[in-house]
Image 1 (cartoon, rainbow, N blue to C red):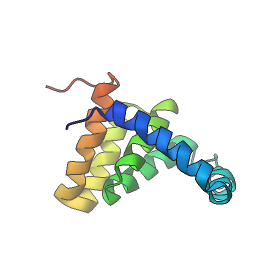
Image 2 (spheres, rainbow, N blue to C red):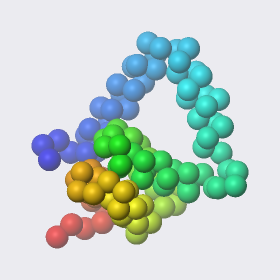
Image 3 (cartoon, helix red, strand yellow):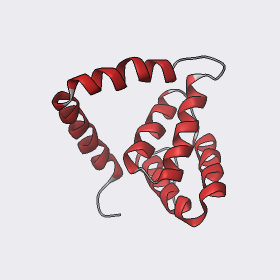
Length: 118
């Protein structure tokens, strides 16, 4: 891949902040009460919810979502093994297209020094 995933992540968050500033009403609603309602402990803990979101992101092919959800899952204590297991569920539902997106997750983990690629 041409650009480092970590460099992409840095640019992604900068652009995200810029767009939040341009759409403050939407930003406050979506990243305030909606996010708080979804990503709080309930019947499922927040780490599990972030891992579920990662599976959906891989299935949907959303690069920004994959990076964000992987990062947040790691912050909550998710291991590379758990993350790859989640990716395997997404691949089982999405086939080779989802597998190609799981490579972004693998590259992200490698760049963060959490796995070593051969």
